[in-house]
Length: 160
Image (cartoon, rainbow, N blue to C red; front, side, top):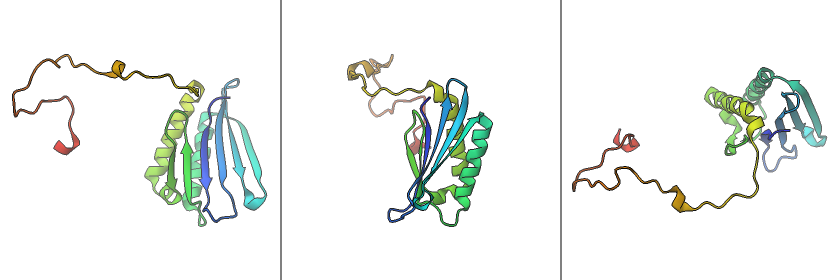
């Protein structure tokens, strides 16, 4: 199995319903995807598993999931999305009513589906020596006349 995509549907802190979790993983042997939905079901947990999906079917499933979350009249408080090799993000569930957010999350999923088999984790990080990260500009020894701002190949946001 590869690293999974995890969508954590978070209920309010005082809710007795519990949180639901959607896990999307890739079967590296077969090359297809599996979706596991852990439904707290108001204290009677159920686990739904859909096996053998190809990429387009996973995207269809998530399109419907995000759209359903946007339409829910008793929504989750927030949604946490965990993608391999990306920072976790958490948004309030009402953000899913905005098409921009739903499309963005679908793009993140599509990107992650394409890279699931290439992501691994390393628990121990190698030490990094800062000296090796110092960039020396080829023009570092040139001086700029006093009062003249050096020119760059990029634009600063505050200068536009």
